[in-house]
Length: 277
Image (cartoon, rainbow, N blue to C red; front, side, top):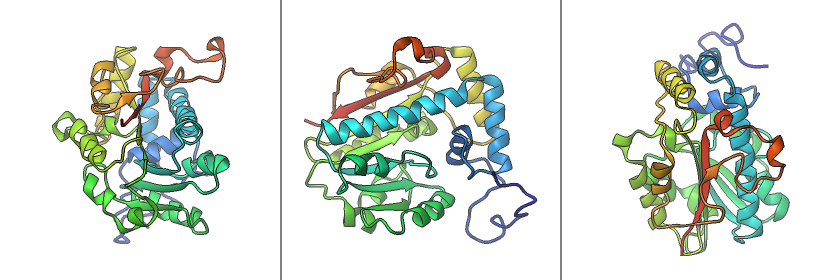
């Protein structure tokens, strides 16, 4: 059951916690698109407005989530990395990064990062019994605060390879905020052999519907900047792209036949992995 104003009128808005549940937030909108329970009327209304412009947005969100799972399996099974920094992690849902990673290696360590206090609250409750996983409240706009956070340092050894995940987050960073420079700051902290996992919405495949989503998000106060494949590829500067390179997320190392996948226009989301030499 999703939250309603009747269930908790003004509870978070007046509590001094800064949760601002009367304003749409990208993490809670994504939770709603995935069928989650931790969202509020403002998030639901904003997501519904976006789906009015792009009816397959739920399909896109699910395909992006599936890409994340395949990427984590690549990191553990092929790259041999056991420590993860998941930035813009969003609310806990099925098949979280730590669950996928620890299924392959119980010793895998994960630091979740998000700027929504609700994510922090739910994440800490979920992870309270897992000493190898934590969640911190900070922002990708301040990479140093992520890298130097005491809880990050307690779990992540930056002298060894790390998997940095920024899945479905950089499209909420404007050109003026320079997402490439933010990624570069993260890269500078990483040891050789580390990997970068990114996904990003685009208007390149289906311009009219995707730009409608962008307008709907922005109308609700949620910044959204769509980028083409060339701009997305530039975010991997300093990394070597892992095969098969940049693809629509539903195609990246797909595990289902092409005939059973949604069309590229239904997804409009690029994904890829880069490895630091």
